[in-house]
Amino acid sequence: MSLYRDRGIVLRTYKLGEADRIVVVLTAAHGKVRAVAKGARRGRSRLGARLEPLSHVDLLMYEGRSELDIVSQAELVEPWRAFREDLNRLSQGLAMTEAAEHVAQDGDAAASAPLYRMLVGALRELVERPGPLIAACFYWKLLALDGAQPVLASCASCGAAPPVAELVAFDISQGGVLCRNCRRGLAVSPAALEVTTWALSGQLGRALKVPPGPIAAEVAHLATVTLEAHLERRLKALHLLEVD
Image (cartoon, rainbow, N blue to C red):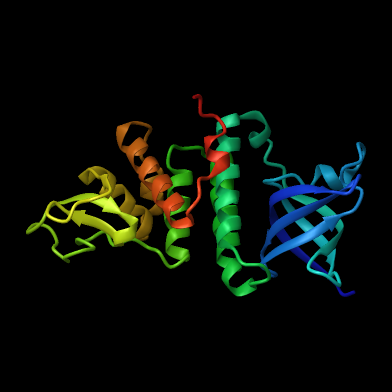
């Protein structure tokens, strides 16, 4: 078995046997990796404490003979204690890692490398400078990375664009925004459309500065609904704090 070192974000973990744990890690150089952390569920295991979801870790691993590699060592790159202290940040962080796991392909290093960098940047922003649109901007960027960047400058159905046509709706199945004549899906305000355009057109910093309020709430809802439609599943982590 060959030994390799890489950095990664722990996306998910689940039990294996009585004491082991399987970890799903989005790595910088080896794509999405599934590995066994032996003894990680024992009470005093330092390895297990460093391999919780959302952990940013430096890993030493063996390539396994099966589809599972083996974790030999794990060291925290960034502690990110804020995720253990703030349920809102925790749910947003877990939702982003959940979405990343559904998009990333096992062992596809070339495709996963930009996703890893994007996820690290979004989680770091969430810890250091929390704002209402960090997760939403990550979702829009993730859609673009997965080949589903929406059309925002003209009607995705008929091609009409302002000022000739007013863009009033959004439907990912149609490819993006829609004019009044073609409208279906979700209604979208001009302000929310503008902020979404910032997130996808090189003005991410501007989008992240939008304060809490109706516009941020609309953009966040639109991004979440759109991503869930693209993935064809709900983001379970995002709805952990919902009250029926």
